[in-house]
Length: 292
Image 1 (cartoon, rainbow, N blue to C red):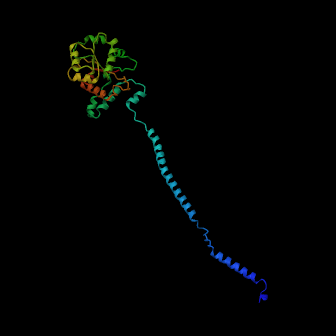
Image 2: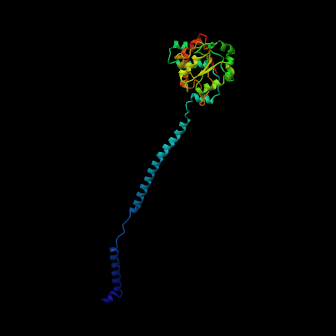
Image 3: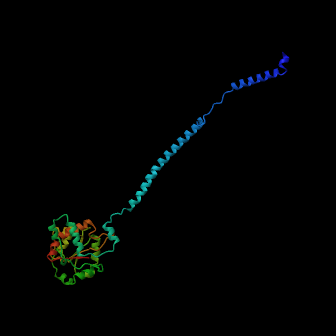
């Protein structure tokens, strides 16, 4: 029997045993999991989701950061428009920027019309109009007070001698403040001669003292503010019987470039003074108005 199988039978059995052992070993080894070609691994999925989350957060942050930027851009775009808006010019700004122009009768007439437009009827406003004959020559900005008064009243010496009435003045100068009144009185020295001048303003002077002074002797020139002059007229401390010249300090400007008509309360007092009988005397050709 051994001879029929030959000498190599044991080798065949050994190989078969070895191949069976290797097959059992391979069966015992864990089989590798087949990966789907398109499906990412779990780790890669996590990385992708984290990247997506961070990308979304960045977008949100950029959107949030862009909102105030856009608002700021809008604000900055609106800011220049605010700066471009021009402020309304006041009378003070206009007077300061423009060259001074001498006053004329039409200026006073326009102020009268504007002031009484809502206070009087059309017929009453017509009564306020003054003819050119009611005005003296206006100052052309070349005169001092003395030279202007000499120009409008060349026969002053004769007028001064003829005036003998107490409680009245021949020449009345109206200005905006007490300091300006004192300054104008100093400028009268070369004109007034022997004429007497009195201060007619409220600062540091009681109205009773001024009334006594006017009744005490003959006064030729009164220099003061329209408010105090109106009060003296209303209290019969000053009468207008001898008045022949009314001079308004029209062209002068204060430190704020305000004129006699540029200060609301002073303007109101000027028109109140004109209403106290001066306008009627102007129409009766008894008083002349000058704009200095």
